[in-house]
Each structure stands twice: as C-alpha cells, then as structure tokens.
Length: 287
Length: 327
Image (cartoon, rainbow over all chains, first blue to last red; front, side, top):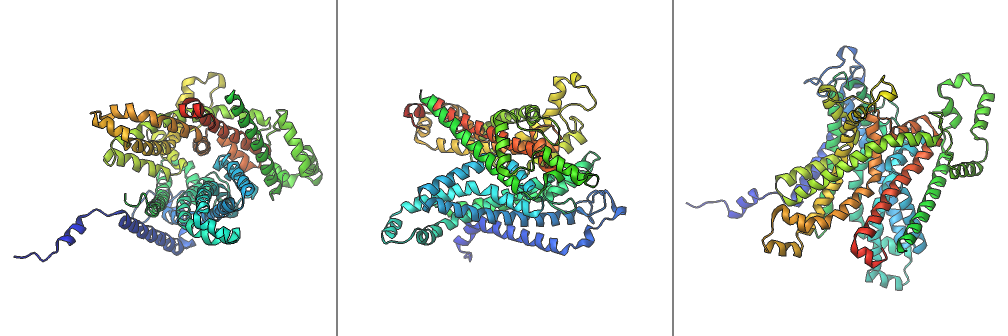
C-alpha cells in the first residue's frame, strides 16, 4: 500500500510557526480586534450608556459581561467606548509624534552642524523632564480637552524616535551614493527626500507601532489623573479613576475588566511592533 | 583634575538646561488661555468684584509684561525663593521639600527592590534561555510594560487592602493620629503597597536589559572557553557574566529616574500618598503655576542627577574609561 500523502506536507503541518507566519497571525488578530472594538463601539448608542438605577452595582453576569456601575450603566459598553476613544487619541498622538520625529531626524541629519546641535539640544531638553510632568503641564496649559492630550502626547514621544531616525539618517548620509549625489549638485532637500527618506520608512513604521502603545498608556494615565477630559466622557482612565471610589465597597469588576481590556489592546500592538521590527531587521529576521 | 573639569562641564550643562527649561515652560504657561486669577478664585467667581480681581492680579504681579515677570521670578529663584503655592498657601520650596521626603522614601524602596529583583530575574531568564523560567519572566516583563502603573496599584489595593485587609487603603500615616504619635512601623505599613506597585512596574526594563546583555556575554568566546574547561551553571555566570553586565545594569537603573518619577505620580494618586507626584497632579488640576514650575524644575534636577551618577559611575568604575580619559 502506498501512502498518498507527500512527506513534505506532513512536516509542514507539524513545524512550529515561523516568525513570518506568526507575525501575519498577530496582524490578522490585531486587525480583527480593532474592527470588533470599532464596530461594537459604534453600535453602542447612547441608549446603553444611560443610567438604569434598578440595575445598580451588579456583578458580572451573562447580560452584563463586565457588570454595572453605581448608576446602573453597563460597564462593557463603557469599556468599549473608552477603548475606542483611547485608540483614537493614541493614534492621533502617535501619528503627530512620528511626523515630528521624522522632521527633526531628517533636519538634524541633513541640515548641517548647527541645526544638528540645536535639535540634539532640543531632544535633551524634552527628555530632561519626566514624561508625565510634561504631560500634566501641557494638559494644564491647553486648558483641558482632547486637544491638550493629543498635543501633550505628540510633544512628549518624539525625542527618542527622533534620536533613532537621526542616527539612521546620519549613516545613510555617509553612504557613497549620497556623496556622489552631492557632487552632482543635488540640493540637501532633494537628497533628504529621494535618498534618505525611503530608507527611513521601515524604521518609521516600526517606531510608530512601538510608540502607539505608549501613547495609549499615557492617554489612560493622564485621564486617570483627571486632567483633560470631562468626567462623563467614557475614557478608560476616567472609568478607572471613578472606580477607585467604589473599590473599597467590594466592586472589583469596575477596575479589573476595563484594565484587562486596555492591557490586551496595548500588548497586541506592542507585539505587532516588535515582530515587524524583527522581520525588518536582517540580523534578527531568522530568530 | 580630569574629574574636576568634567564635573564643572556637567554643572554648566545643568545650568543651561534649567535656564532653557524655565524660559520654555514660562513662555508656554504665559500662552495658556487659562486666566490665573480665574483659576485662583475658582467657584467664588460670582462673589468677586472686578476691583478685587485687579487687586489679586496686582498681588501676584500678573499685570506686568511677561519678560518682567520672568526676570522677577527667575531672580527670586536664584535667591532661593520659589514663590508661594496658591493651593497650599505656603512657600513652594517648603511644599516640595516636605513632599519630596515622602516620595523619596517611596521611590528609594521601589528603586532598590526593582534593581535587585530585576537583575536576578534577568540572570535567571538568561540562564534558562528558551525554557519555561525564561518564557515566564519575559512574558511578565512584556505584559507589565503594557500595563498602566495605576491599574496595578488598583489591583493590589483590591486584593491586599480590601479583600485581605492586610494593608491600609491609602495615605502615608494612619488617619486621626497625632503626627507625634505616628511610629516608624505605621509609616512602613503604609509604604508597602505603593512601593510594591512601583517596584513591580520598574522591574520589567532592568530584567529585559539584563537578560539581553547576559545572553550576548554568554555567546562570547571567553564563555565558550570557560565551558570547554568544564565550568557550568550559575557559577559560570557569576564568574564570567556578572561582571560584564553589572555596570550597564546599574547605569540603566540610574538613568530610569524619569520613568520612576512618572510611576510615582500615578502610584501616589492611587494610594492618596502625599508625595511630590500627588502635588504635581494637584498643581496641574488647580492651576497652581508657581508650584507647577517649581516641580518641573525640581524633577528635571532629579532626572539630571540620575544621569550624572550614571555617567560618573562609568568614569569611576570602568577601567577602560578611566584610562581613556575622554569619555
């Protein structure tokens, strides 16, 4: 009797997932989860956020997965709304921050010695104060609101990425083809745009993906501290802040579930960034 | 003599940094749409007449042009006067000094604990690379890195203070007890949960860093040679690995003062611990500009000190840097 299964097929089924495949899986998982949060967050209308005093302080049950709070609001709905808000703010902040980092990194590498000095000094200046103190100050200065948080996150996260991009751009600038291009009389801007920028894109993407979880965590932190958003907006930080007052009465679900949801979102994005970074780094791509 | 010059350079750097920082934050705050008089009056706005507003503005010197105000404020700071906190109605220097003591206790405990435990975990993970202790430790580190510090505080609060009742729910001293009667034991009792929170968060970077560095050392030729001679296990790591990774680990721990301070802000808020972090939040919420500015400058000084110690350690301890001269 002859086996009809070719030997290769069997082996490929038992082989553990390689980096590329597991990364694809994680991308798919993250995308699915994002989509789910987006759909649930949009489907949940104001109806399910209204207060229902007869359903106050209920522990998690099949009808209220995350329980209800002291006003009878469904915690699952609030958490999803909060996650949506956090992701949105994190996205805005991270995009703005990445763009800032790219601008400063490119400027430092191609703008000459004086510009480089100034930008390095600026990076040091921003890194010299703890992030959270800067965030609090900017949230205060902008007078609260979403805008203040986004500005704060954008302004506090660019320095470390700018440093990485600057170093990378400096290296590219020393490359021979860039030197030749210079001799041909191309302008600095042209070189930055055509020779340096394309090589920075992978770094930029990984940097953005690693920045994004940080941005979400800082958004949660700053809303938790009560700076920025008004208390009735369902941000994760505000939900957790409110839960503090009810924890001592034994309502643990108010803090546990929203927190775990936030951790899962942040962790997924962190994993995504790490793996893409490994894939794009030729020295680590085969680990 | 080399050290003296190096230290002088660092001092100059610190001065320029603080100067720039004070100018930038002062400019930003002057641009703010928030009216400090309004923030100061708060809920009493209806009962305050325009004349009284003028008086308040004049009292705080808010009528002068920004440059004058900055010079006034900066020269006062140089004389050691950081202004008066609007919230606490006491000199800013006193508020910061008193609260920094509380925060320093919290941060020092967490810093030491996280350093020692993080280093140990990193070594264990590297020694068992790819097996379950390594997987567990790296999993913990990455998960903790994506967890907000205040949430860990909340969970610890629920478990240890509410369910088990082992620790108090908040504050640094028992409520309703005279300050003179507070014992050291009381203080420690109140310190444990916040310090544990802060330490749990701070372990992750140092453990991951140690693991990575140790793995690099373990794959080097001199370790291979040692293995060939028959050395193995933790004895090998202690003899050939630890020395190589200790200095970078300690340095990393000193350069992490910035994150430590940020973690302390969140932790103090969860546990109502009356430290500098809580004062920062109160100043931000209440629009207490003098206090906020003072804290910005002091936290920058704190972070700078950490980096300075890290640099100095490299210079003093590492024989290569010592002989090289230029570092």
